[in-house]
Image: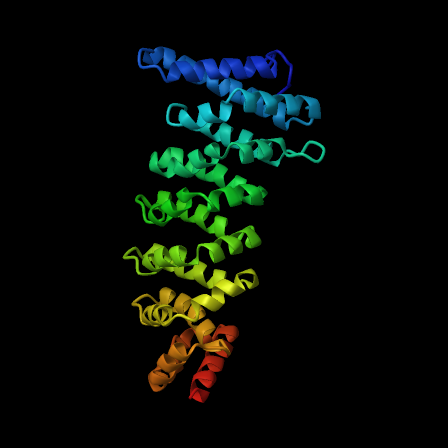
Length: 336
C-alpha cells in the first residue's frame, strides 16, 4: 500500500489519520448513532488502521515518519480508545490493531524504544490489557496477544505486570470457560513467569508464600488441563537455575511433598508423569529437611515398589526417563 498514494485514506498525515480514527471511535460509542452510521464508522476505523499500519511497516517509511506516528498515537490516547472499544470494532480491525501494536512495541529508533517507554510510564494501559479476560472471548484473545508482545520484548513491562495486584487474578482466569479463554490466560501467565527469568525469580522470592498458596489450588484443580499445565510449569520453574532459592524453599516443605506424592497416583498418566519430574527434585536434594527425609524413609518400601512398576512402557522409548527412575530408586533404597 503506497504511503501517500491516491487510495482511500492514504493522503492523510499521521495527525489527520489519528483524528479521523478517534472521531469514528467516539461515534461508535454513542447510543444515539444508527446501525447504518455505525457500519460507516467501522469502515473508517478499518481504513485508518490500515493507513497507520502502512506508515509503520512500509520499507518506504522513514524513521521520522514512524516517530511521528508513534507520537500521535501516544499523545492522543489511541491505545486507550481502542482498548476501550475493542468490542465495538470488527474482527479485522482488532487484528490490525494487534499488528500496529506489534510494530510499535518492536520499533527501535536510535537507542530508544518509544512505545515501551510510553507504556512503562503509563502502567494503567498494561493493567487494562490484563483485565481484558473479564470482557469476553473476542476482546480477551486480542488483548492476550498484545500482552504477550509486551512480555516478550520488555522485561520492564513484565515487571509492571508481576508487581501488580492484577497478576493474582490470573489464578482465576486460567480456570475460566470456554477453554480458549483459559488457555490464552495460561499462556500469558506462563510467559510472565518464564521469559525474563531474573525478573520472575525476584518476584517469586518476594512473593513466595502468597504465590505458592494459590498455586497449590491449581495443582488440585478439578479441571484436567489446568492441573496438567500447572504441574508442568511447576517443574520448569523448580528446575530453572534462576529459581534456585525458590526451589530450595519449595522442596523443604512436607506439605508440598505430600501433594506431589498424591499427584503421582493420579488417574491420568500424563499428570503422573509431570508429578514424577517434580518428585525427583525432592529425592535428589542432598540437603533434605528432617521432615521430608522422614516421610520418604517411612514410605521407602512402597515408593520403591511403586517406582519399579511406574510407566514401564514409557521407559522403553525414553532412556532419560529410565535413567532418572533408576537413580530415584537407588537414592530411596540408600536412605535411612
